[in-house]
Length: 328
Ligand code: ADP
Image (cartoon, rainbow, N blue to C red; front, top):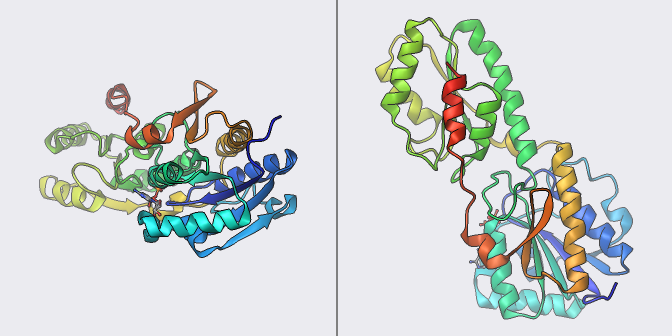
C-alpha cells in the first residue's frame, strides 16, 4: 500500500469512554503492521502542546483491550482553543515528524481537530468515543454499549428492591444533551416512562399515568431520566411527584460515573478495533482524511469532520410509544 504518512500520533480527548483502549490498540498495531512509527500523545491536546508524546511499540498496548478508561489519559485543554496553543502543538508534532493524527473523542474534540487540520498540513481522523451516542454519521460510538449495559445491570437491581417495597424509583442516567442511554436502558428494563432532553415531557401526563397505575395496584414503577432531561434531573422530578402523589413511596437513584467505567463490552471492542484499523488505512492512503469514521448499516462510513460536529443523531420517537404500550 502506498504510504501518505510515515509517523502518526494517537490521542484520546474530552469525555472518557470504555473501549478507548481497544481503539488505541488497533491504531498502534495497524500502524506498526504497515511499518509506520506510532506515537502516543498523553492527555489529549494538552499533551500535544506540552510535548508529552512517546513512541509506542506492540507491547505498549498489550493487555489493554479489556480495560476501561484510557492508557493515554484524557483531558479538556483550554489552550487548544487559541491559535497560539495550536501552533505550539503543531511545532511539537513537526519536530517529531508526525504527519498524521488519530483523535478518539467526542464532537468537541472533532471541532478542535477540524480547526487544526484547516490550519496545518497534518491530516486528522476522528474516531467517535463517547458514551452519549450523540454524534451523527455513525450507528455506534465507542463506549455507548458498555455504558448502557452498566445502566441496565444497575436498574435491574433497583427493580428487585423496588418490587420488594412497592416503590416508585426515579433513576437518573448520564446524558446532559442526549437521551440515548436513558432511552435504551429504559426500554431494556421495562421502565414506566423515559424522560430525555430531546423531547418535552408533560409531567401531568406522567402523573396521570402513575396515579392510574396506583389505582390498579401496579405499585412498582421505574422512571428513567437523563440527567439533562427537559424537566430536570431525578431530584427535581421527585420533588414534583412527591407533591402530587403524597402517598407514593418515591426514591431517587443517580447512577453517575459508574456508567463511564468498566471493562468494554464485546460490541465496543469490535467497533473500536474496526474503526482504529480503518483510521490508519485512511492516513496510509490519503483517502477520506479529515473525516470521522463511523459505522452505518454495518459498513464503514466517513463523515467530514465539519459535518460530524454539526449534526446530532435524532431520536426515533416511535420508541417512546413502544415504552408506553409495553409498560401498561
Ligand atoms: P468531547 O470531545 O468529549 O466533546 P470537549 O467538548 O470537552 O469534549 O472537547 C475536548 C477538547 O477539544 C477541548 O478541551 C479542547 O481542547 C478541544 N476543542 C473543543 N472545541 C474546540 C474548538 N472550537 N477549538 C479548538 N479546540 C477545541
